[in-house]
Length: 226
Length: 226
DNA sequence: ACCTGAACACCGTTCAAGT
DNA sequence: ACCTGAACACCGTTCAAGT
Image (cartoon, rainbow over all chains, first blue to last red; front, side, top):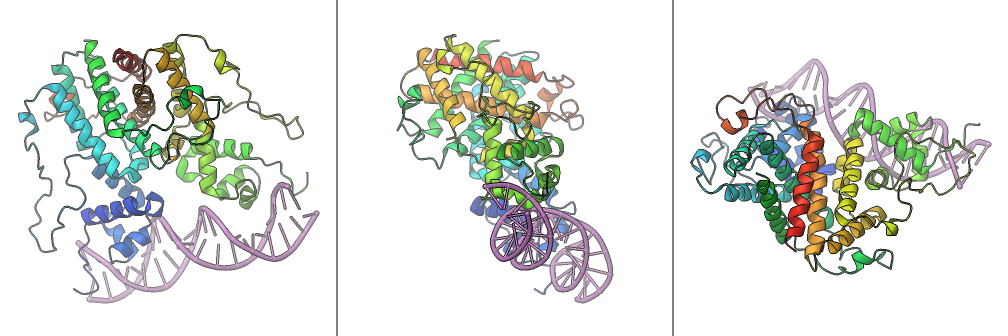
């Protein structure tokens, strides 16, 4: 293997960038540092992302939000392997064949999406300015629309329910990320000025359970209006 | 007015920084550009934020999330004015005296908070990594806990409901910011692969109404469990 | 086609100096 | 106390050049 042709690829770059984000934070993701991690000169990245760091950010956001894409420590194919599409979905190969009840499908999507975002929470700022017209986003919305229609919603209530669900899941991840790293709910400043807060001081939140119960409540309420 | 003593202050810096963020985007907020806008050498900012840009980011996030703080085109006091505290709240001077029903108080907070975030949506990425232990955050949580307790919730259900509400509001803003700037829901790619999506194509979303109805549904569901 | 290496404009931050 | 000006290390990106 000579000095050139280091076996770079967009996928390898994205995965390495995510490793840096997860391990050191978004702010430390630098073209030069990324090059170092890939054992390559920083400028080599531009050959795979000619539009620069912004395009790389978009690709990272697309990767994180695409629940169907394999993620993380999946065995990295050696250079020279069969370059097949890499878009195989381990679960539910044909989404049209999913005949489970509507609420189960929605819960499934919500938990999978939440898990994905939590795993790469350092990349959350990249999702905000990403327009939701990617393949994966359209697929998710189609799933949501179908499920809510099956639940009995019609007209504008369908996209409205999907928006509420999407909002809740994203917001719950943001909420959890902000809460983590804090000790108990605010050690100081719970003197006497926040009486209701003091009544629940010291209770460590169970984010998984909180998310599940909030999700159940929201889904029940959204379809009750039908 | 000589070359020194340009009348800088943390508040003036934060407001100017927000103007840049709102007008040109977070990425273009630069210490040097900020200095230019303030008619000051960039390094003067460090006298008011000795810990640098990170501390400035935190201050911006605190400003945006503090519903009680006056925001935007509030008349800027001339240098030499009476330097009073600047924390006067135009509405509801004493929050303890708020005897409206619990759901009205929650809806009020939710709408005010949403409005604030939407107005400075460019600063959203700064909120994610901001720990929620600021004055304003504690005040908001105390309000939420009190309202949900009054609605009949007890024990862990109270912080759980507050978390769900906070998640929904934040997520709804993120959802809207992502959706804006898109034409109708995805012009291309609605060929035949996303049938449920196609059924609702061309319907422009009414974000205000979507938010309101989703909020109503969520609140109703959260207290129904009591 | 794929990667290197030097270069340029710009950035955050430090520090000594001015008033 | 408050601000300036030069300096340093680092960054994103361009471009000509190598293979």
